[in-house]
Length: 317
Image 1 (cartoon, rainbow, N blue to C red):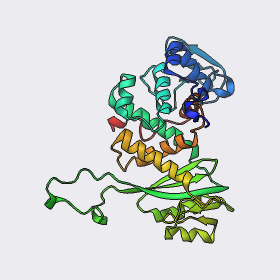
Image 2: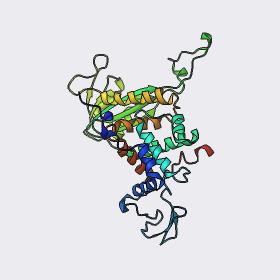
Image 3: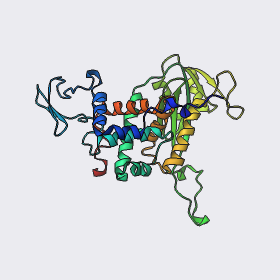
Image 4: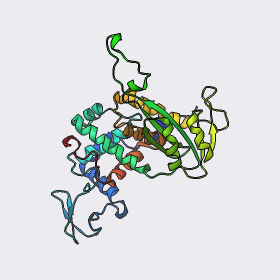
């Protein structure tokens, strides 16, 4: 029997031991190399694009020789105004990608020895950076579509007379549907909506012409058969017909997301459910890539992503 990829040595190319053994200077050089990859780590002025600069080593800053603008390796990025050391940030990203089903912010804060608020916001910043990879993605080829409900209704009341019937729409509280489009051998797109039927419009907007679509027996997917070549599978009969008609790939994503929510985070607000859905989709898409490659991909994306309009100064409102 073949060995699972996560059990192989190829999946482990980065470790906390190596990060802390390299120290702060090596971590700083890694940030520079990924921020300015086109110049092999040589600073580029973010204001005017000039390549000539003066170094200010006492503050780890640079001054542009053309416009005199002062900047650092994290200026204008997701890590702007950071307080954590570079080696701790790199270790945080390593921990973030090592959790195949995510990591709770409480555990994150303990491993990093920082406040819970710091770990929570940092994790969400990283999720925003990885979600940017597919912000304008259009899928083609063979694509599976499905939806799954995720609810956070709290505990039932103690007395049976005070309990409500959660099957009724009025009592479903923060119940949401995660709609997923997953390209076989490619990327996954996730959306949080109130009804699964809203996925019809999403599919029309995010699928290229000529896409082969696979869906289950839900009646609202019938509308997509007019635009796309569609393969349907009735789950009350079977999960696959043995000839490629199935939605097993998108169900694999939902399985990972359910375990992430139930096993790691325990509580996920519907307001931020889209963040966790994007995280689970990214992990699913890159499950055959080493943890080092995943860590540097997230770090590079965060260093080339502008300051977050949601998470920068979150606790200060």
